Image 1 (spheres, one colour):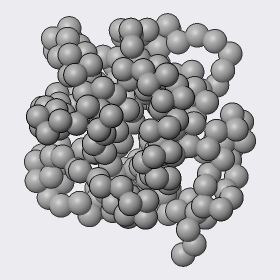
Image 2 (image 1 turned 180 degrees about the horizontal axis):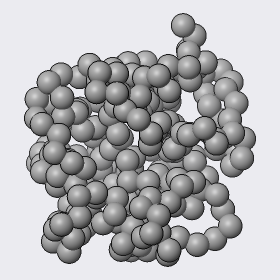
Image 3 (image 1 turned 30 degrees about the vertical axis):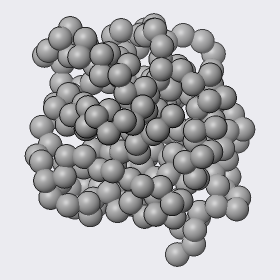
Image 4 (image 1 turned 180 degrees about the vertical axis):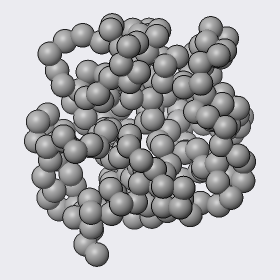
Amino acid sequence: MKIAVTTQCLFPDVRMIHYLVESCERQGIDLIPHGVGKVFAGWANTMYFHTLEAMREFLAEEYTHVLQVDGVDSIIICPLSEIIAKYVSYGAPPCLMSSDCEAYPPHLCTTFTGDMRWKYLNAGCFITEIQYYLELIEKLHALYPNEGNNQAWLVQQWPIDGMVLDHSCDVFQSMDHTVQYEISCGRLINTETGGRPCVLHFRGGYSSPENGRDDRMTPVVEQLYGN
């Protein structure tokens, strides 16, 4: 397995993803942003015209897998070796997708059932076999050409053969005000699931055009690493 760690960064430079960049540096992870200098034109556009382009380039460089995280509002808090080990513990599915406690878009999430709180799909962070994801997104883009959010593509097709959700938040943690957690020795622990997530994704809510979601991320980063 050769895995590329990447994120979309449709900004003039990487300033808006500084927390992610800094977190990868702490963990010795080689982050490869894509789309730098390009203009953001919606999530579906970003996925199809930028992320897939980057994946094709990774495939040509003999990468087999991609760890994709949202750039503005995510940090990685462990070495890549731990992420890979946990992915393998899930059975190394073609795609391990982050889960969420909130349904989005709500009216399309009727196929997500069960009593577990972290039962919904969140398309912001995932580990995938590159060829699998290229073929999947090409198909969904053709099926939903007028849908501007790629998460809605996946939700409408759920369940998807080969895609598994990280229900225990062992790899990905969608962060909102309802998450119950404690921090110990530079790690966040989800006290509901017992998961020690590797990627924290501060999804949803307002994102400043100047500072992204730094206002929500900074207190947690300071708890993890100090001022």
